[in-house]
Image (cartoon, rainbow, N blue to C red; front, top):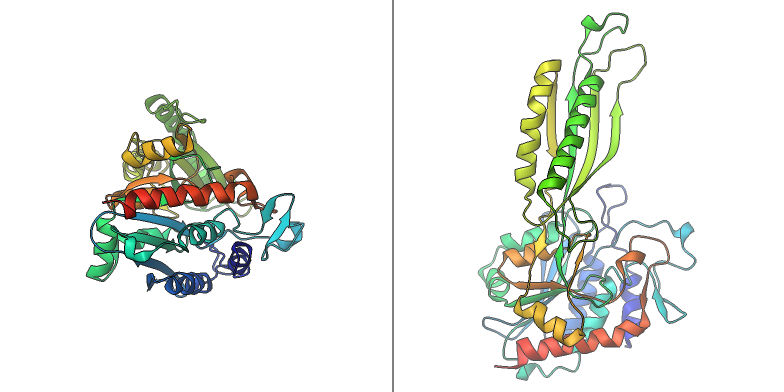
Length: 385
């Protein structure tokens, strides 16, 4: 089976993950396909179900003992609208030296590249473990990566905890990424008291309280941008985006309920729990003045910033590629692998600029350089004593 056939097989297995349960899908088709590939090469493959029905991670391992290398990626994709594509999103289309398809670069294509890098590896020569990690739900909850810290068996914990280095093959145009922002997505709900608008004393206006709370949040944004600044990022301050607001039901009724949803992109040095605590303390006096109740809840647990400066793996990738590491604004599963003690870098073929949109593609010219790079890393971390 050729590289192109394998990539086409992965693309043909839909595995959308979404916070919308109506379009959320299982990733088991992709997981079992990958398990069959790497089992045939002699890897020990373990499919690890998650709490969510139809979701699983895969650990494919060869070699024993401490150290070694993890090659990691996620098996899910974002939702798609086929009518906006110029080709079938669930099949490989080769055109103009590009490999088109949903997940071609973000990031099912990485697994096809990994297979090419390891297919001729003599497993008897492996001195330290080589681990292929495939996760679920990176595009929504990141529950696949979160599950790494709670694996049920001692063997699973041992394999992950002893790994020395990890490369996550997200699309970076083959540039090493050693810094990215964290992310929070939050929901603020204000409960007041509805009443006839002719007499404001008959109710407590949730929309007016929310107006003041939004002003306080925007002031907090300005304050955070003064406190946290990093010139290594293109957008060198934390951001806060007011994304969704709903409130009230009629112009002649005092607004009884109002909800706001927003996201924040966190700089290194900022923690989501720290920011949540600060926000609650900021909003409590406003709620008291307006005599309203409020709840402040995360829409997902959050993603911490990632920072791994001048590590052995980052420096090795820099030497092999010949370019300096970069910072990016998008989030990855890197903080979860780093929390397990792994020297972690994000590096893979393709561009984030074409991810999450119609006509996603991986440049054909980046396939072989990525294969070569992975083989060099495997030689360094898994084959040498």
